[in-house]
Amino acid sequence: RPAPTPPLSCSQLSEPQRRDSKPPREHAEVRSEMSRKRTLEPAGLLEQVPERKRCCWGILTSQGSWADRSPLHEAASQGRLLALRTLLAQGYHANILTIDHVTPLHEACLSGHTACVRTLINEGANVNAATIDGITPLYNCCTSGSIGCIELLLKNGAQTHIQHAHFPSALHEACKRGNSQCVESLLSHGANPDCQLPLLGSPLYVSCLHKQLACSRVLLHRGADVNSGRERDTPLHAAASQDSADQVSLLLQYGADVNCKDSRGQRPVEMAPPGGKAHCLLTAFEGSPQTLSQLCRLRIRKLLGWSRLELLPSLPLPPLLTIYMQNI
Image (cartoon, rainbow, N blue to C red; front, side, top):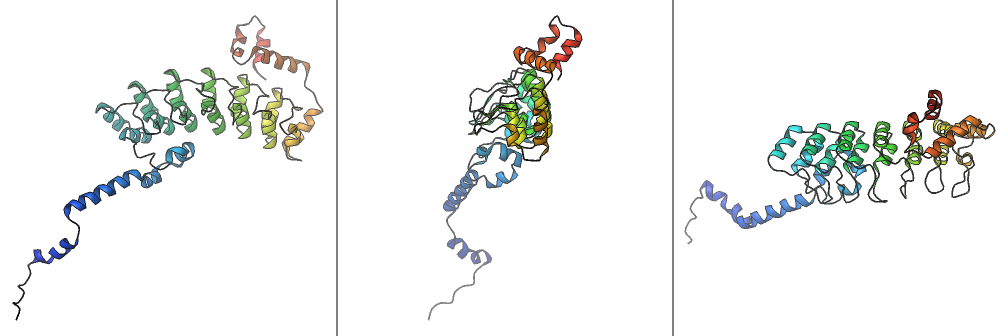
C-alpha cells in the first residue's frame, strides 16, 4: 500500500506552474528578443507622427526609419525648449543624425519652433544639413510657413540655391503651399526666381499650377520670367488649365505669350475649359493688344533681369518713370 501524500504548502502549490514555464535564463532571452523587435518595429511611434511629416518625408516613415530618433529630435519636434537645453547641456550633439540624416534642426523647422531653432543654431547646428533625400532645414521652414525660422536660417548662412538638380527646392515648396512671405524672404536673400527643376519646372509654374496667386504676384514683381514653365508648358498654360482667371489676368499684365504652344501644340486658350472665366479672358485679350507703353515697360524690365530690378531707383530717371517701371 503506497504511503499517503503529504499536504502541499501555499508556496508548493505554485511550484508546478513554475516548473511548466521556461527557466529564468530563457525568460531573459525572450524579453530581450521582444525588446529588440519593438525597437525595429516603429508602428506605435508612427501613429504619433503628425500627418504633415508623413506627406513631406515619405521615405522617413518607412520601416525602421524612426527607430534611432534621439530625445533631442523629440524635444525639437515638440518645441520643448527647456528639455532641449537640458539635453544639450548633458552632452547631446546639436547635429546628431538619424539613419536618414535628419537633424534636430530639421525637426524644429518643420514644426515652426523658432526658439528651438535659435537654440540649436547657437549650439552649432548645421543650417545647410541635408537628408538622404536632399531635404534641408530651409525647405522644412517653407513647408511649415514659419517666416521666423526662415529669417534665422538665412541670417546664419543658409543657402537659398539647391546643391543638385534633383534635390527639392525651398522656393518651389513655398510656392506650392502658398507661403508668399517665405517666397519674399527667399528672393530678398538672393534666391533665383527662375530656378528650374526637371520634374516641377519653374517656381512660377508651380505657383500657377496650385493656384497660389499671392506667390505668383511676388515672383513676377521680383522679375521672374513670365513665360518660363516646365519644358514647353508655360505658366499661362498651367493657369488656363486650372481655369484660374485671376492667375491668367496677372500673367497677361506681365506680358505672357498667348500664342505660345506646349508640347502637344496647344495654346493656353485651348487648355482652358470652354466657357470658363479663363477661356473668356484669353479670348477677349487676343482681340485687344497691349499698349506701346506697356510693351516698352515689359521689355525694359526683361532686359534688366531679376537680379538688377532693385537698382532701378539708383538710375538717373525721373521718379514717376521709376515708379512706372517698378510696378505693373
